[in-house]
Amino acid sequence: MADDSVASVPFGEAVRVWARIGCLSFGGPAGQIALMHRTIVDEKRWISEDRFLHALNYCMLLPGPEAQQLATYIGWLMHGVRGGILAGLLFILPGFVVMLGLSALYAVFQETSWLPALFFGLKAAVLAVVVEALLRLARRALKTRAHYYIAGASFLALFMLNAPFPIVVILAGLTGFALHRYSRRHAQAEEMQAKSQSPRRLPTFTTHAIARPLLVLVFWILIWQAPLLLVRNLHAPSDLIAEALSGETNVFGALFIFFSKMAVITFGGAYAVLTYVAQVAVGHYAWLQPGEMLDGLALAETTPGPLVLVLCFVGFLAGFRNPLFMAPLMGGALGATLVAWATFVPSFVWIFAGAPFVEKLRDNAALSAALSAITSAVVGVILNLSLWFGLHVLFAEVGRIALLSRGAGLPIVSLAWPQWATIDIAALAIFVIASVLLFYVKMGMVKVLGLCAAAGLAIKGAELLL
Image 1 (tube, rainbow, N blue to C red):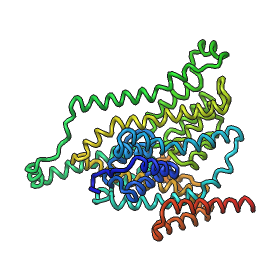
Image 2 (cartoon, one colour):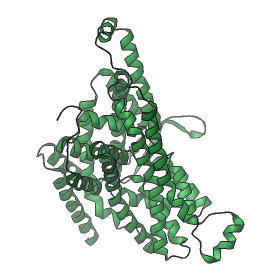
Image 3 (tube, rainbow, N blue to C red):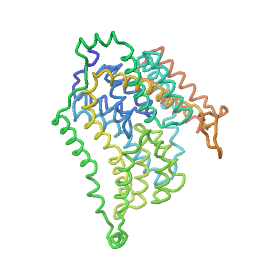
Image 4 (tube, rainbow, N blue to C red):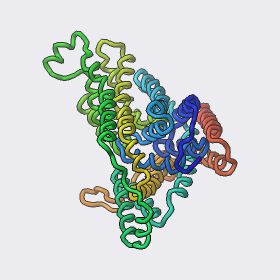
């Protein structure tokens, strides 16, 4: 396959592979990006490393779950709009279905202590997959000393300063662009040679070329907001007068409006908005009880798919407890579905409207320099995510220690620090075994995940019996 080509793949085979990725996408963004890279680039060789990184760089700049957007982008590259819809849906559907079932069990029984046993070994194995992908990505993305500096600075900004990663990524891109301009200014001989060879320039965007993506954008925004027309008019007969007097919409309309707003500001993943969502859901709407958001987060961390699926847990409880004229479980299912629609459909909007522009800019030298710097920053981002994920897999308690504080004890520089006495020896053993199988035995990833999941179930089962 050429360096920038996209393989011709039967649509049916793509369906099977994207379904497998959706079912195995544990480990948060780091694990999901690692899984896609290993499957699509290394094993299947459907797209090149450069095309994968180019798509990843764009998705890192968008609000919402970047891994789902990356799947949608790659699916769009391979099979157009239907491929993007397929890849994006199959990436989130398995996790959504599992989350729906777990939320129903939680709403009925208010119990989550049995969940860790289901995915204990799987999460430890995913950590090995993440480490392998991180090393592979670093070898291929960090080509110059400047790239190493950018990756290191990005990691430190995230790990020690807790900086928002979209800001880190944008600054990295600006740094790459500035370095490119600086190198051109100080290489006059090369510049003269380049001028004689018809330099690459930014493509000219005609009125038609701009109008079509705008129409696509408007079309997908209308699709995104279409459910609001239906749910705003849902009423229990006894609520019609009260809602008419108060001017407030029903719980399902409120859910859709609130999470539609969240969808366009969720830079940095689920953790960036969880605190605010919890405050509004508990304090303003009373959809949840204090502390239930942490239970929802525990559910989301043990399911495949984006961590932002935790928002569907909020939607389920809101619909379950305020079902209008429906049965509680039906109301919960509707609430979770509306939140999923409001949260994930915008990802299709950004890809289908923006990806054609991004692809046309792929051969521009200045933009390539900026994106290569963003790739370096992404290495730092994934290193930070991997370290965070690893600490929480291997240790029961992880806190933060302040290295530098300002007044009132507010930390300026801090870092995650585990309680060493809480290390999970079983998780560490499974992680080491998975690493050996992946790095040295070269066993297939699905087999490794299956063996480690079985080992984790056996260990937790034995603990329950004892």
